[in-house]
Amino acid sequence: MAAGFLAVAASRGVSPEALRGGFAFDPIGLLAGEGRIQGGLRARLAELCDLAAWCASNAPGLRAVDVSSDPYDRGGASAVQEVAYSIATGIEYLRQLTNAGLSIQQAAGQIGFSYAVSGDFFTQIAKLRAARGLWAKVIVAAGSEQGAGAMPIHCRTSRFTMTKRDPWVNMLRVTAECTAAVLGGAQSVATLPFDAVIGPPNELAQRVARNTQLVLRDESHLEAVADPAGGSWFVETLTDQLARAAWAEVRAIEAAGGIVRALGSGRVVDAIEEVAKLRQQALAKRKAPIVGVSEFPNAAE
Image 1 (tube, rainbow, N blue to C red):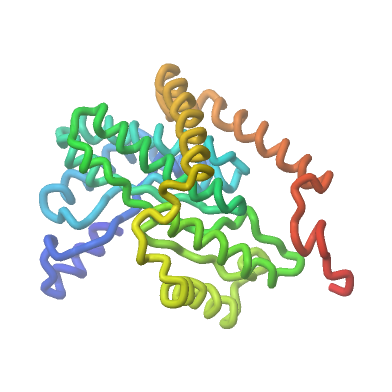
Image 2 (cartoon, rainbow, N blue to C red):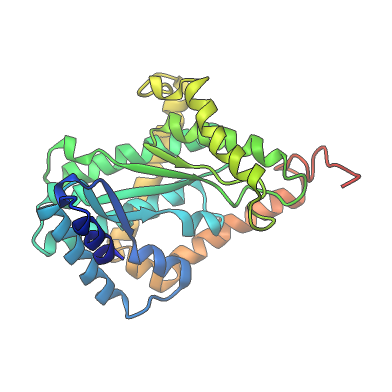
C-alpha cells in the first residue's frame, strides 16, 4: 500500500517532501488484536524499519508507525491498561527503529498513537494527558530532547460504549467522547455514526457523525485553547494517578521482556479479561448504568 501510494504521488508530480500523513503500520497491534500475524512478527518489524527509514530520509512529513489502543479497548481494557500497553508498544518500536540505525529523534518522529475514547469523560481526558506525559518521559530517558517527545494523537470514539438499543443516545455518547478527545490533546478525531453497531451506517448517521465535529469546532471553539483542562485540580490529580499506575505497569512489562513477550505469555490478555469481567458484573447489576438500556429504556422499542 505504501509503495502504491508513493507511486501515485510520483506520477502526479508530488515530491516526497511535500507529503503529509502516515501509513499507520502497527504489527504488534495486529498481533494483539488477531493473535497471529501473517508472515510472522519478525518479518513485519523488518518491513516497518525499512519503511520508517525511507520516510525519515525522503519524506519527513510521513509517519510509518501508528500505535493503536483499539485492540485493548475492544477487549474492555481500563484506561491505565490502554496507556501502559500503548507506551510499551511505542518503546518496542523505538527500540526496533534505533537498532535499525535511526536516531532517537528520527525514530520518535516516525511513531504516532491512536486511542479509542470511551464513556468516562474526565478519565478519557486524563488518559490522553497521561499518555502524552509518559511518552515525553520515554523520549527524554532515551537520550533525545524533550521537544522530540511530542506525541501525535489520533482518536476514535469507542465502539465498546455504543448500544444497539435506543441508538439515538449514541449521538450523545459520541459528542462527549469527541469533546474529551480534543480537550485531552488529540490532533484528529474520527467520530463513529450512531448506528455503527447495528449495521452499515445510513446517510443520516454519517452526516451527524461528520457534523458533530464541525459543531464542536465552530460553535464550541474547542480548538481555541491548547490545554483547557490544565490547572484543574481534579483533572491534574486524575492525570497523575493514571500516569503513575500506567508507568508502573510499563516498567513491569519491560522487566519481563517487553510487550511482545507479555502478549505471548498471556499476561496482557489475562489482565484485560479480569477488568472486563468486573465491568460486565457492574453492568449486569446496574452499578454502571447504561442510558437507554438499564436506565430510562424505551419500553416500546
